[in-house]
Amino acid sequence: MSESSQDSIAAGIQRLVWLGIANLVVMTVLAASIVFLMLPKLERAVATTERVEARFQSFADDVQPVVGAGAGKAVEAIRKMDADKLSETATESSDATIRALGEKAKRFLERDDPKDANP
Image (tube, rainbow, N blue to C red; front, side, top):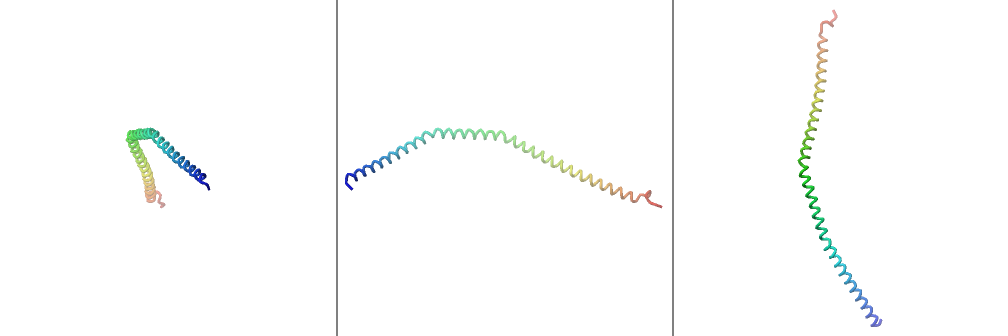
């Protein structure tokens, strides 16, 4: 290989190195500008998120007592229904027991009735 061909290869490599460095610098500047231009949008997004969160918290603060009272009423209604059902069951059971005792007493008294006895 001659010296001139080596010099042209070295010059080509040097151009490629400078091109790579220039490419790296341009990419770094573009990335920095994108980040710089996105900062206001990020700040707006954070502010919007905070506003929405504050509105939800305000809504939750307003609704929580109503929901709590509603839940209390629901639990009270369920307990009342359970008590009513238990009362109905107890009433039916006691009525059946009283009827059965009445039938037993009737049979017992009829067994000893002198009218039914044969002379």
